Image (cartoon, rainbow, N blue to C red):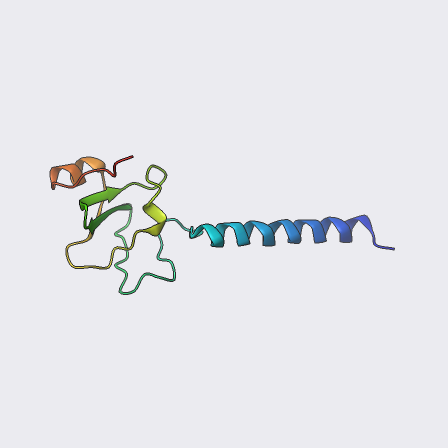
Length: 100
């Protein structure tokens, strides 16, 4: 027979494993502003500047953590891509927020 403590610990471990699987399947990194496995030549962000300036076929788009569904999928690794400290800074440089 298993003790309650062992069952509780097992349930917690199972729940954590399931959560890790769901997060990994969604392509979301634990630290949303850090690189994921598909980001080659990733440029780390300056301290406090976590808005991503991404260049795509749709133009120069900035992504704010928690506001853009594309944030976790965006790599800052191509020439011209950069980090911003504020949305105002991004907009002032000619970048736009994502549509939709």
